[in-house]
Image (cartoon, rainbow, N blue to C red; front, side, top):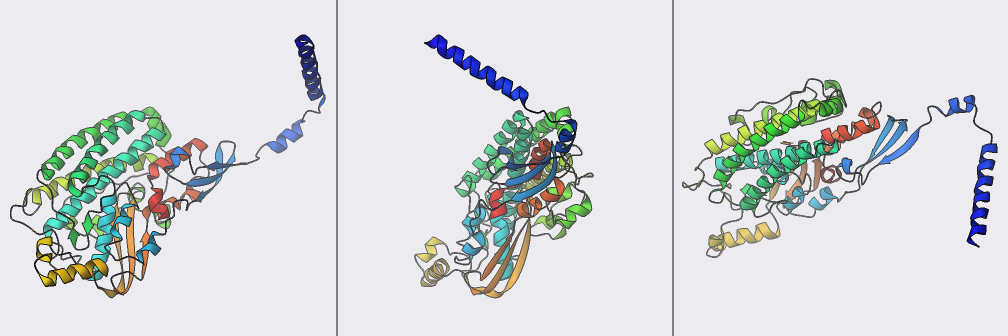
Length: 431
């Protein structure tokens, strides 16, 4: 019985093959018409190189991209609407979830916007300003380490990813000892910071800075003159100065195209005006330039933190008890010891916790030089403890707007390099 079945199967297969050979074959004219036909391909929202839930609808002519449509919103949480139902202080933890690779920088940007509304942004104690700058620059180093590590891993250089994440772990240890949390820190407060540095923290920061420059040099040794890396990034995704400005790019993506614009220099805030640092610029605006800009920015951040540690009022241990918050009981929570012994401080704490600080009516915008670019907060106030309207200018959202213009004409494999060079975060893009 098995032999009979085998013979029948063979006969059926032979008949099918004969029928297929008998079908008319396409002639040369038919094949000519097929050339140039385009295919639509979904890249994301779960593709590893899209760095989050980004979907790009690609139209391909062979391996060449002819059209690209970014599709965002998969991570939308309505942060701006949530802000209207919370006091200004209650919204601070939500800023951690924007660019979650640099939460301390987000905290500072939001706090400075509210302080501008209150008219106290230029009255912050010097020690508070130094601490905020240290936090922002550590966040910049952490963000760039992850950005370059993932960029390199996307193109096949896994060793770089391991090196950069080793250094990021040290930054998380510093965050934990300073704020009590490693990831979502919520360290900044309106009018200052939640606490001063713990004993030995500044020494640990200094030790980390001396170690990270060695790591940066090692990454450069692995990548900067690596033929595979250069071939995959040089002259790929080139953006001219005019295009970068027209599409509103900011941060390293703008400076990679040679546009000398850095809010820390052009519109200085905190104590940046008293610090010395250089703004690295690219010349071509390709993926390779964006990589070089971020590498040099990390070195400049190390330089900035060293200066802050040298100049920090009160020294490492703050033996002179320099304040880290503005001296205004209607903005900053009073010390617990006074709350338990003074009726006035108890009332202030009760009002701040339940109703929030009383901000004046008006509207302000503050732009902050975040690792990804200009993070801006527009606040429309009608008085009271909550904003009437809030708009967040997220740099990742604006930077991704150029993709539909930039990707066409590139190979499919170049998309991975271009996305990696942009270093975006979808939590900030979608908000």
